[in-house]
View (cartoon, rainbow, N blue to C red):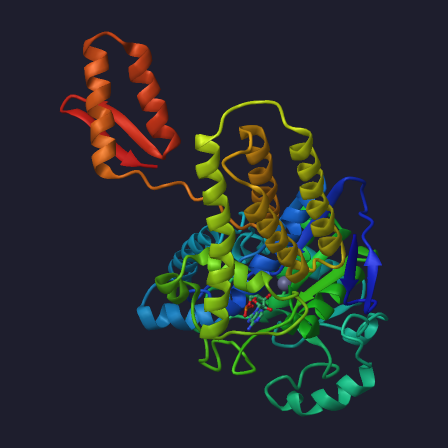
Length: 469
Ligand code: AMP
Ligand code: ZN
């Protein structure tokens, strides 16, 4: 498996630190609003990386944070006259709902910055003790950038170029820095802001330190993959490397992966430019599986321009797979059991060849665009070769192959038919009748059948009630 590593600017063979295990950290969103579809790109892309790794048999420990202390959260809290935690908890819940609707798996751990302050105080103290950080007169703690020899290695920036570019920044209240390149680890509180006690001042952490600390706590000092959008390469990830490697004395992450932007009219989609659609906006028009399909139809390192036409094309593409699977299900329902014929065995061997090609595309730095083309070829193969004259076993295998490849991409292509209320009521009546006749086996069977369709029955004094799970 080859991964493009931002650190070396090369595709490299993936070799995990510990055999069979992957430790992966993905920078998550700042929670002050509904997420937009630009934020959804890294979620979908790295969830697919995780799913493919799991398919390959790796045990993936996937950590993704929520930044729940930030100027924008505080501003919104003040506007609404509530505590910042009310805002962050609200949007964490909304974000988790969007993730579920996009079929993005929950992380192994979703740490929150405000719950990890202790670890941040500890790492900042270590950096001060080792001479990599200093406390200014007002209690601000800065990282001493030039003390870390590897600074610039991820973004391939030269310190002196950075110095030139940053000199003008020194005017805005940061005169107390030793060097314009130094960045904040801890800052004093301002009126009306949340704060924590610290040895240096009552205050709150800078943004970069949270990821160094959470990554260390949940994954250890050295991890396999650190990922996020390409806007995070500098300064966020560069600063994370400086903090973690200076504090721990070890290389931080082996591979650094960055997705390109989701653009609109060839400009980065962002809250600040106001040119965004939220995931929720899109969900009003499309099943979010279509959004997922759209994201994966381009390679993650290529910029992707959002447009109504491309979303329609994504819808057609996704529907083509769903329809094929539906047809196969229909054929399976009408097929009879029987041994596979020699011809069927030959066809299934051919179908397996598609899986090998799918894997080859994914092994090449997760080329989901090519991997999806292979799924289309398999769909075409199924449409050509599956008919009512085939055995059940053959049709089932063919369907499983398509569902498996789609599932690695996190695409749900087998739709469970939604059970109608009238059918539920009819089954409940049949169950009551069965119970009256003391046919408890049938009654239990009906309950299980409904449960499999997401319907929970409750026997109450007023009769049987049901709800969707
Ligand atoms: P933020 O909440 O802005 O820190 O963003 C959360 C994640 O979304 C980060 O990994 C960003 O790099 C990523 N991101 C934000 N905007 C876009 C975009 N337009 N395209 C792709 N990724 C983005
Ligand atoms: Zn981060």
